[in-house]
Length: 257
Image (tube, rainbow, N blue to C red; front, side, top):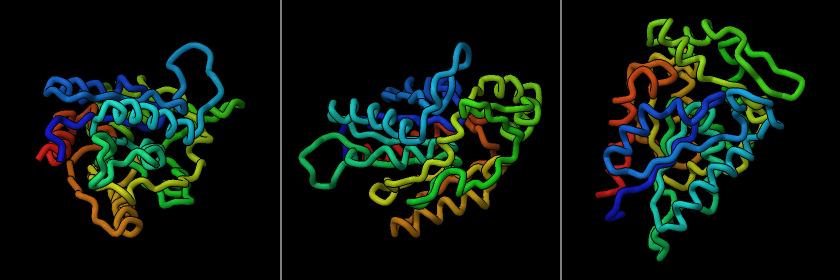
């Protein structure tokens, strides 16, 4: 185990910019941890012209670059993925895992999924989730956007007052349709310990579907995930950041023992 604090890499969900996770990252940084949130190429900018939509593989490459930067500094890394981010996070850690007995100091030591998608190899986010419980439009360039912010808020932020949820929902932007259809070719969860934060009141990825993700980890890796359950909706970083912080600190604490 490490004698120093592991670094933490946050992987956002669909349509989510890094700022969404600030209520959690600022609290964790105040505890002396190095923590970074990846800007996913599959997520469009909040304003200005839209570039070519990124793929899930582009996202995985962006995550891998952030991990590599930390590993080159000899850091142990815990990757925390939310929602869609579970797919590129799983894809990204190929060749970056810390091997037991290795002379190399750095590497990924744990994957942590927060009500996240965990496909089997050969399957995509869309395969696992099926249809989404919200209205989405797709433009000619392949960017998805939310049709009804209020309806999205009522679903994704179901554990918050509607007006507050709408404020959070306005932070969400465009997302690449192609990224949801890209299939997982490397199931990183087969090779590292896994933690899963199951949100029992989630209306986007239901508890039953989350449990299927947990079962996928067990069946594909031969190891059980460490599961924590909290009574929140789909975006606990907004509605219950203190619970997410406690969960992440518990996970990284395991690596410091």
